[in-house]
Each structure stands twice: as structure tokens, then as C-alpha cells.
Length: 534
Ligand SMILES: Cc1cc2nc3c(=O)[nH]c(=O)nc-3n(C[C@H](O)[C@H](O)[C@H](O)COP(=O)(O)OP(=O)(O)OC[C@H]3O[C@@H](n4cnc5c(N)ncnc54)[C@H](O)[C@@H]3O)c2cc1C
Image (tube, rainbow, N blue to C red; front, side):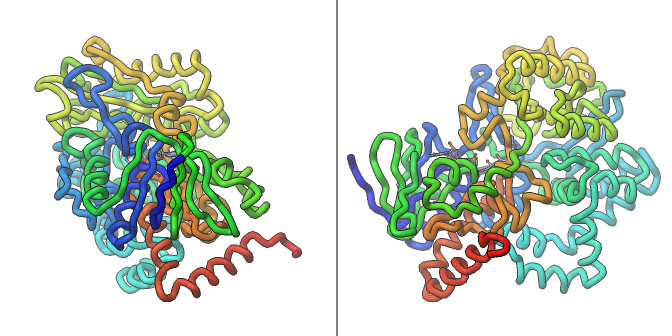
């Protein structure tokens, strides 16, 4: 069978794999990118899958993390066909009783709206935005670079001072419920934070959830929730076009079945069609940690402590997604919801805690929390004038993911919840597509039971504990092999940092100081994986 030789092979063409391939090729490496599916993009794809003329984002849809990511910005994807579009408003939360909270494009407008709900909330909002502005750049650098973020950490300290640094540390440990109650008088303001924290799988009552809620609302206020004109797939297409323009060879439609390891080093990969790609310098894996260490790399090449830690790997919840082609815009009871690309609905602020409790104990939420995208509002090219291309997703406990009856019942509950805040919604449906957790996984094997973050975002699986206890870095215990997926720090979302960090780590190990780096990493791994008492 044919053998190709290159400098580096990247397994998986999700956004992280695509970014990694771009970064390696920019440095002059000869790169092969192998993707199991027939097209690149991973969870960043779109298609006319519901009705002709309606473009549907099949997985991710809104990209504040990409817009704020220094990694994606520096790729200049606008030169490769990417155009960002924004809805008139960023996002809204439609309450079951008809009230509505809106995050608007300008901070002053958001603040004015919140003041109407509770005098003083507007000022509190603007204070929060000012705090964000102070730390924004070093914070984003710290989030998107490998652990420990020494330089960005110092910059952050210089900007915010010791008191500010302590505030940030507290924010990192706070629950979003506590943050909301400390800062705001109205439920409308609080639910913006709590609903956005629920984009991760961290319960709103848990330590660490405040950071997620705060980060996402502040990003929304800062860069909006942009979408690629023409569909999510246009972002992946731009990444592919750029990669090919710098020489990356893209092979789609064939999964990698094994990583070749010999003499203690990753040497390349074997593909399902029997062919092999030999890599002179590095193998980068844009696949979840359990797929890499529990399948692609034979167990005999891995330290037993790593395999033991992998048994404790904690996936995030399952996802059920519905896509609709609608004959009319969504008939919201609260008209303010009509201008936002993203609308949260189904429960109020307290209800979000109930949903998290349901997910935690493995109960199907009777009142699901729903994240809904009205894509034609955000980008009028998505469907014919006067219509709407919409989707909604909700989370389920992993144990129910493959139960067809339970999934069908949840589809019903989700549509009922939308109907409650937008009477007439159901009769506007021209066509519907259900993406069950199994469907999501079939379309991208990295989405195990529809998990969208390649592992929980809870504190026990963050930083040096992501994906298992280790270095918080993309280097693996197998020299020459790098983890480039969202299972690596900093985790899920389309920001490209996991792929970028893996590429930089691989390049640095071939630099003049590479020998030293390799020795340091080897020693660090041996300390981390040493048996206690040994
Ligand atoms: C329903 C849903 C909604 C989301 N919404 C948003 C959002 O709005 N905004 C946001 O920022 N993020 C969102 N996310 C999260 C985001 O999409 C992911 O975190 C991101 O795509 C992770 O990128 P990745 O490259 O690590 O993995 P993926 O995008 O999952 O890509 C992995 C790729 O590897 C391929 N692959 C796997 N195994 C192999 C193999 N053995 N051989 C070859 N190829 C292989 C897969 O086919 C896939 O193409 C959402 C995710 C989902 C599922």
C-alpha cells in the first residue's frame, strides 16, 4: 500500500486540526492533514440539510471565541473568503412568562435596557465591561496559550494590580449564581450571565461557572456573536483554502486507524484504506483524548498511570439538536427577542440550576434549557427573504443519549418550550431535521454521544488536569505526538488555540533549543506519571 512521507501529519480536520496544519505549513513544514469525513470542518460545517435554499449550521454556529482569538485573527481568513456577519442584537433570554433580557451590540444600550429592569443594573453592567476592558488582551493571551501563561500573567498583573489579580482569582473560583446576585438586582441581568455559563457543562452553582458566564457575555459585548456569511462551513472552507495555499495536502474520507510508534517515538499514522503516512517530525492528533490514548495509540506504548487516569476521563453532557426551515420569522411574544442571533429559553434563572441538577443526577430535564439560533436574523443569506433558518439544541444526561424513545420525547418538550415563548412557531415549520446525540457522533466521531467540548469544562479537568493529570500542554508522554484537539487546554469552542499550541510545541522541539525542551518535557512527564511512593 502507498506510503507518503512528510514532516508532520495532522489527524482530524476540525478547526483545531486546520489551524495546526496552517501553523506548521507557515513554518515551512511539509504537512498532510487526514480527515475521516468527506469534508473538513469537524463541528464547523453547514449544509442545505433541512430544505432547499435554507443553509443549516450542523453543529457550532456563533463564533465570539474565533473573533477574539489572536490565533484565528492572525490567519487573515478574510483573504480566503470569510466574511463575518452580526445580528442587530447579540443575544437574548426569553423567559417562560414573556419577559426578555437582551445583550445589545453597544454596552450603553445593554446597560440602558438592564436599568429598566432594575435601577443601578446598567451602571453595574458598565463597571463589569470596564473591568473586562482592563484585562482583555492579556487575559485572552493567557487563556489561549499553553500552561503556565507566564508572560500574559505578568502583563495582567501589571494592568490590574494585586487587588485586580485577586478579584480575577476570586472570579475564577466563584459560581455564576453568586456573581449574578452580588452584581445585579434584576433576574434579567443575572440570567444573561447564568445562561452563558451554561454554554459549558459547569453547573451554575459550581465553582468556576462565573468565569464562563462572565467571559462569554463580555466577549458578546466586545466582539458580538458573529457568524460566517453563507454558513458555518465557510469558516472551515477558509481555513482549508488557506492551508492549501501554503502547501498542506488535505485527504478527506479516510479515518486514521493507528498512530505508528517505534523506538519510543511517534513516526506516522496508518489509515483505514491500508495506506500509511510517515512523519519525519511530528504527529498531531485533533481527536479527543480517549480516542487517542484508548484506540489510536496501542496501550503498550503508553505509561500505565496515563491509562489509569484515562478511566477517570469525564465527558461533558450529550446534546440533542433540532434544525428548522421556517416560513416566517419566529413569532416571539417578546418582540425584543427578534433581533438577536442567539436566544436562550425554556427556563428562568432558578430553572437553570434545576436543569443542571437534572443533568447531574442523570434525569431527563422536563423543562429543558434551550439555546436557539435564528440564523437568517444574523445573516440574511441563510434563507429566502421573509423566512428563517433556525436551530435549537439542549443537553441530555449521557445515559439517555441512545434511548430513541427518550430522545423523541425530549424533541417534543423542546418544541413545546419554543411554542410557549413564540405561539405559532410550530405552524411556521416548513421542514425539520433532528440531530440526535448518535447522529452528531456519526457525523463527527469526536462528538461522543453529542458531547460538544471533548470533555467536561469543570475545574477537575482544567489546566494541568486537562485531559488527564499532566502538564497542561500539548506534548504527550509519547515523544513526537501532540494532542491538538479540544480535549487539550484550553478546551472546547472554536478558537483554534488547541491546534495552534500543538503546532508551536512541535515546531519548538525542532528548534535549536529543542534538545533541552525535549529533555525538560521528558523529565516533567516522568515526575507526573511516577507512582506515589516510588
Ligand atoms: C452542536 C454543537 C454546537 C456548538 N456550538 C458552538 C458555538 O456556537 N461556538 C463555538 O465556539 N463552539 C461551539 N461548539 C464547540 C466546537 O464546535 C468544538 O469545541 C470544536 O469544533 C472543537 O474543535 P476540534 O477541532 O477539537 O474538534 P472537531 O471539530 O470535533 O473536529 C475533529 C475532527 O477530527 C475528525 N476525526 C476524528 N477521528 C478521526 C480519525 N481517527 N481519523 C481522521 N479524522 C478523525 C472528525 O471527523 C472531525 O472532523 C459546538 C459544538 C457542537 C457539537
